[in-house]
Image (cartoon, rainbow, N blue to C red; front, top):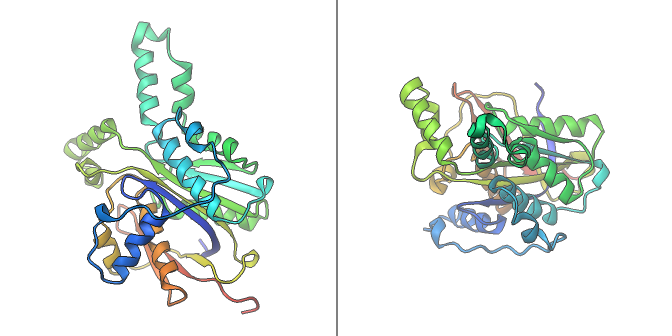
Length: 302
């Protein structure tokens, strides 16, 4: 697996702790400045010029995962340069997917021996539904893929984004991670820890479990102007020390919360304004590590 480099055009977030990129960036900036700050006393501070003014009306009838994903995608696309719809791909990763619709469909199957199984809940429980609806709403006409990797949930999406860009099929890749809170999934995790000794699921059983989505707009480094950020995805590495930023942020656990940590590192790199690279590290259940280095895009010809 070769290291891959991509340029970041824009990003967005919507979670139980950060309602937009401005709210997260404000926390990160204060932490970098060694100010005493807690997430609860930081108000959202990010105004995005919307290209999609009917967003709230559109998502009002959608499931929770779609609502989170749409808000993060909306912010990322509005903060990026205008993408070319036919040359843009969409990647979405969700570990739990739309669990409420899945449960509703399974309940309908148990009624009357399955004679009245709900087509509506079935179509909305399919993992690819979120990405499909997003592609339609945001006018993305390139490849549309839904991933469900348990290992490297952040880096596997970045790997696939790099592959698509390297293929020349697209000029932009919009990557999104999204998961909802689920009492049912939490109970399954609790049972897995107690009955199957799957200790890696214990972090999803806390009362402080979270939810949300993060989205990035990416393009080839050679097509991007200088002054932005470059993501350099590395092969498995030796474990570096845990950053103080991770410890201070105290991100609530949910399956794709690693993307929130990546967003925090992006905010730190933007605040650093050209100083040495900032590192995001992802671990698997065997404590192997992969990293993403965030640095300023090189000047033309360098």
